[in-house]
Image (cartoon, rainbow, N blue to C red):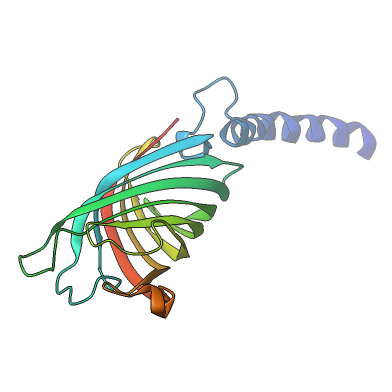
Length: 202
């Protein structure tokens, strides 16, 4: 007799739990509804914005330079990507620098990124490439350069974010007015950089 009552009871419990199981499955996989955009990953992201760099490689420079920074990142999953970025800095924050220096660089490297809390995400990257200091006749024409940096992002939508960045980039140029007798010996310098702009993912 107990066996006869136990079967209908199991059937009633199973029927009651079936809608909950279906709802749980839809929320995890998306089901037939829209995909949760916050969980999507995009293969590419592009960044563009305002940039600033200090100018320690130029003798007697008193002010850093303003310009712009652009970058393209190829993502491999949610946390890793490879980045290529270019910079151009030309306009001094104030008058007083010698000559008319400018700085250009092209850098590449890996990037780690993740969501930190709510709409706020962060990233860290290591960059290597070349840097050119123009307007001051420095040697070499293009120096090997590289460093570390990172930043924070605030998501406006799944595809669009605002980004604040900071880097510390090193390079080696000879001092201005260095002579061939001194073999144009390079002088290693480190420049802090900062930027603010927008990121678009696709």
